[in-house]
Amino acid sequence: MSVTSYTIQAVFFYLFSAVIIGSALMVVLLRNIVRSAFALFFTLSGVAGIYILLGADFVGVTQVLIYIGGVLILIVFGVMLTHNVYSVDIFNKLGTLVMGTISAIVTFTIIYYSVKPVNWLFIGFKPDLPTARPIGTQLMGTFLLPFELASILLVLAMVGAAYLIRSEVRGTSQAGAGDPGNEQRQDTAGKKVH
Amino acid sequence: MLSPISLQDYLILSGLLFSIGVFGVLTRKNAIAVLMGVELMLNAANINLVAFSKFIDRGIQGQIFALFSIVIAAAEVAVALAIVIAVYKTTRTIDLDKEDSMKG
Image 1 (cartoon, each protein chain N blue to C red):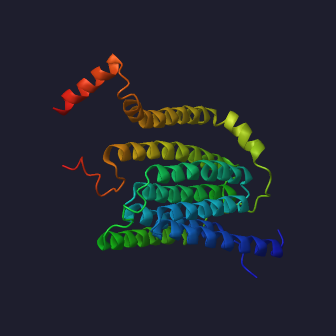
Image 2 (cartoon, chains in turn yellow, purple; image 1 turned 135 degrees about the horizontal axis):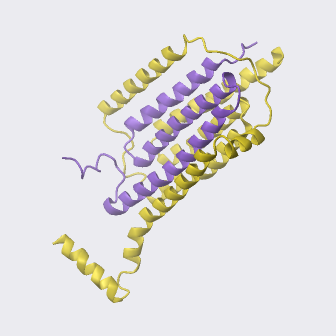
Image 3 (cartoon, each protein chain N blue to C red; image 1 turned 180 degrees about the horizontal axis):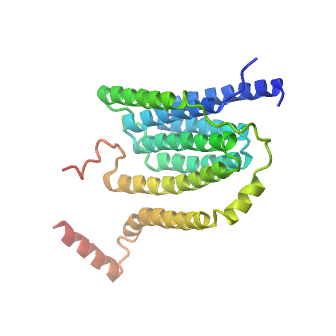
């Protein structure tokens, strides 16, 4: 790589880093949680940019698809469904704030001083080739078992999440429908209370 | 003229992001805001994986690890939000300081 290529890379690295750190600070500091969710959008986009800067195009696109397209939408839905945005005071008391700041600084100090002095084994810059094909072949070869386990995990998480949400809704939506099973269920519920 | 970006720079960026996530998890009261802090920490870990994959990995195994991490994060956030909404339905609040019914 030429010198200008390094410079362009460095410029983009600092640009993405500024976006990530600034919006991450907004995520944890803004009082309005809806704005926090929007700031999270910029953090995740910046992380996707960092992936692409690192030559991981497939991971970057996956980040956009799953994090921005899935997780962030889920979080925004969660914010809307539990719409007590202004009733929950965002921050704890001052003591918790101070302890959180100290913990964050200590964490960063530990990471910094364990990362900085190490002389990492460096194998030289690899050319940025398309990664979708080797990832696909390795997922179907070396990593076949984790791949299948991940699919099972996703199904379990989906069923579990749907069950957690659904069980309560069924009880309230059928209340007063007049079927005997429902009355019996209410009886048992009443017995549990007494 | 800027110097080339080394592995350390990526690791320090990821450490900063992780520390911000720690701060968010420890100081927020809203359960969903705590989840956002967890997401920040997961992203920091993924940056680490992909950076190591670029700099000291001969193949692309680091990227595959990052992909698995993203998958597990997606499952985690789905279940966590379901729990948050279930808790909200029963107690009508997601203030973590008020969720103390299991306190001894």
